[in-house]
Image 1 (cartoon, rainbow, N blue to C red):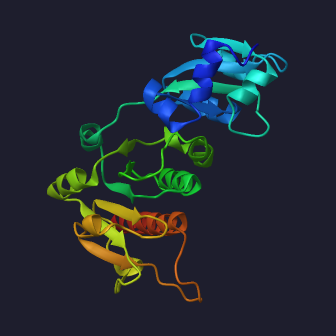
Image 2: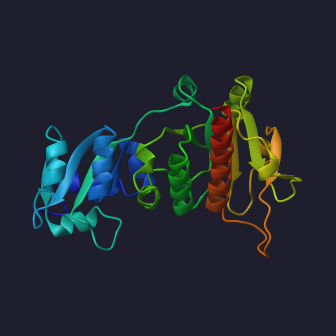
Image 3: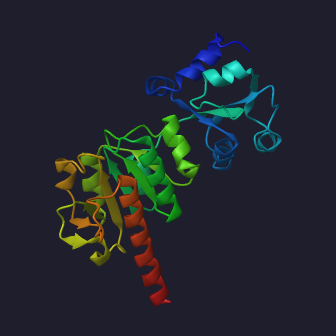
Length: 262
């Protein structure tokens, strides 16, 4: 009931990256996200619910072996990143996924992010990758924390639908190329249109920082640079929009190819 409770203080620390890194956990808020986490069999440790609103019956049926803790409105507000807490949140253990786990599975279409810093952009890119059935999303150094509450909300649950790996791109990208992956970066100076580039083969789409773009070190490792042609007067697209265009173009090419094969 009290915001001075030791456990409540621990949960509140998860709103900051330092606390998440220290505890190896993060917080998700709202019925939909908690339900998605349970469906994906994420490591949900504790579900915290409003005593005023009562236990969410649908969630309780899905999580009979998870610890449930009823709390006061003050405690919910202490542990929430939103102005109006939805009445339920969960504490989840962070998964430990690395390069080996990434290469152990399919890596046909992957989005690689090099220093993307806006939580909303990261969340949108993850949703778009999920929408086209991409194999994974890779977060290079300097990219915003996946477990930032704003990022989590922006994914709308898609973070539980595909692997998301943090990695050192200087080590990861050469390994990908050795496995036959084509590394594609975007550049406003590129001469080749994304629509004239074959994206049907195993492809990793690399997108960079909102202001600076892809770093020179990463760009030097790319196999091809492409530009998204625009007919209007806008100079460029938001990084999340650019990622979405590229992902859906890759998906379109693959669908056309597979349909023609049949």
